[in-house]
Length: 122
Image 1 (cartoon, one colour):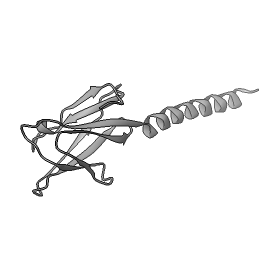
Image 2 (tube, rainbow, N blue to C red):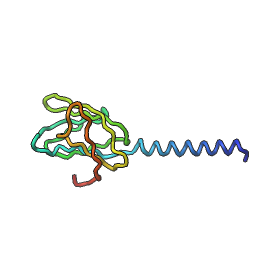
Image 3 (cartoon, helix red, strand yellow):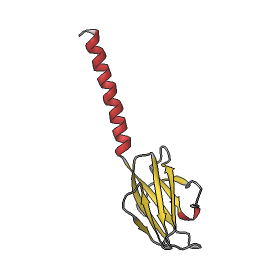
Image 4 (cartoon, rainbow, N blue to C red):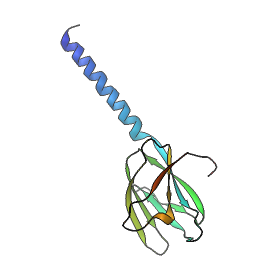
């Protein structure tokens, strides 16, 4: 084996490893919980993440939505009155799941995304 073939093999191995790490992170789904349990401001709303189909969140509900990849996402909330809130957020690094509390969302402010443990009984 000459030097040139060794360099080509090492380069291909590094490219393959980088591609595998990227594919794992980009394709992995993470649960995002929309917390609408604050009954002092009861409201039903529709949530759209990254332009996907809307998900209805009932008053007093804790709804799970799967997001792809730990990257920047766009959240859009539409209230029954027609008012809309749209902002971008980044999924917390290293988190298995995250939550966004609806009462903390305010126009012009970034959404507060808290890391949480994924649970089946929410």
